[in-house]
Length: 276
Ligand SMILES: [Zn+2]
Ligand SMILES: [Zn+2]
View 1 (cartoon, rainbow, N blue to C red):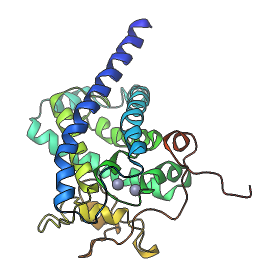
View 2 (cartoon, rainbow, N blue to C red):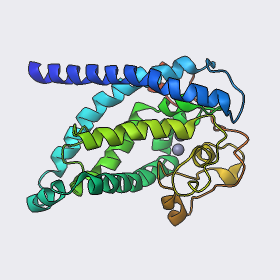
View 3 (cartoon, rainbow, N blue to C red):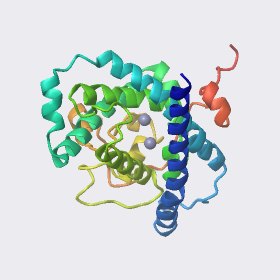
View 4 (cartoon, rainbow, N blue to C red):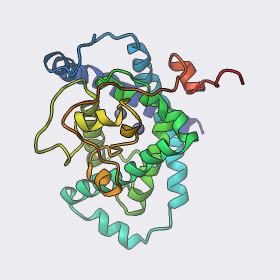
């Protein structure tokens, strides 16, 4: 029991260190990009930056802890469902085949997990936090309620695990899974960045700032619930949620109020409507 506790504490320490190392690297890349090619002029030290930093460090560590528990339970529930011969065959495939397969399977699962979090009110109350940002920048990527993050990662894990692509579970420590996780962190920061770039030739093939900014648009009812994919817009094209005009959105955010500050958002993301 003590050993398990120490192992979890060690893992959380490693996670915290990794977050600490990544933050200045991400800032060094994205702050100059946002100063040179801003979609809209805004301060680096904006009013809710402390809330987003709390999400980055405290929310990120809480998410890692919950993921360890939920991931282990899920893997235990799914163990024995997959023939051992299939797992061995998948494990013997080269990384250059496994990595794109993991990205495609994970992104399709992400598309539906994300779409459900917009459609189901009990999931939306947590996902609304991510959409509460009224200005986009690279750090908005971190504004994710731990329940939202854990739910999404667990849905992504299920098909990946059943197909033998995540045999080590949710925290597979092999090089391929770490590379995929680092790429995801960098790319998801990029698509939230306050940059006015249009990536001609890539728009529509891969998620870009313009593509994901439209997911955060608050320009009217016709433009909500679009562009759910994290990486591959083909899912939005296939399932009818693709929207990518030439211009960027004018406004971002949601019309619902969310609780102010990290701790209140953690405990009650959407405050009770007045009068109840
Ligand atoms: Zn969303
Ligand atoms: Zn987003």
